[in-house]
Amino acid sequence: MKQIIRGMQISIYVILFSVVVVAQESKKIKIGTEYTIQSEILKEKRSYIISLPASYDNTKKTYPLLVLSDGDYRFLYTSGLVEYLSKKNRIPETIIVAIPNIDRTRDLTPTNIIYANNSGGGKNFLDFIEKELLAEVDKKFRTNSYRILTGHSLGGLFAGYAYLSNSTFNAYIATDPSFWWDSQLLVKKIHPDLVKNIKYKPIYISSADNYKSNPKGVSAMRNAHELFSVTLRKHGVPNSNVKLEYFEDENHGTSAYRSLYYGLLYVYDSLGLKNTIE
Image (cartoon, rainbow, N blue to C red; front, top):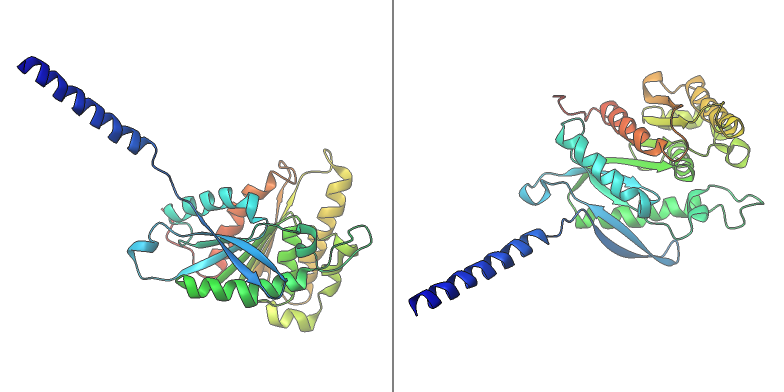
């Protein structure tokens, strides 16, 4: 009888241990939380994803913001990259604000062009970010005054547009941006009076691909990237505040990750927020 009881006890212990193990194995890892905001400017409900630094709940300090367009598919690799660089003491811990798309072409372009019927909503999208989204984020979370805007392709075009608009951001990362848009509109917008207001804000621009693999695409993209950076310098932006970096072994899509890596290092260093390197 004692052996039976002992056997039952052992079985119960095994079951309980198994339940604990299963529970431990199924623990969810949280990397972000999605919120919604009703935009009066855009006349629609928008979502945004927040990723908080690992130390957020254990400290009272404030954090810089990294705002990214195309947040629905750029959030995962951006959050991983920011966490890695901050753990390696290359950049400060940062709150990520990722904005998923509803109408990408509408929101990320500054002007309307014939073959993109719904384009040209960039001003409204920038107003939404500055006047509504960032105001809400500042209320909900412990932010400081440092804000970085990053975008890829059309998102890079939008980052460049926000930069020339002297928006609330302190620094900009435009990865393989579509500066060819509307016959290089952004290049044409650069003039000495405009530069006076933005010359001390760092901007990082990357340019992907090579002429051998994609001659037409590279010609259009790179020409606009180089003219943009050269024209900024010509009108008074210090060399230290505009950086153009080439990734000729990466295509337009794959360049986004490496560009963001080096872009983050550059802008945080330029802002004087670079952490101690190991």
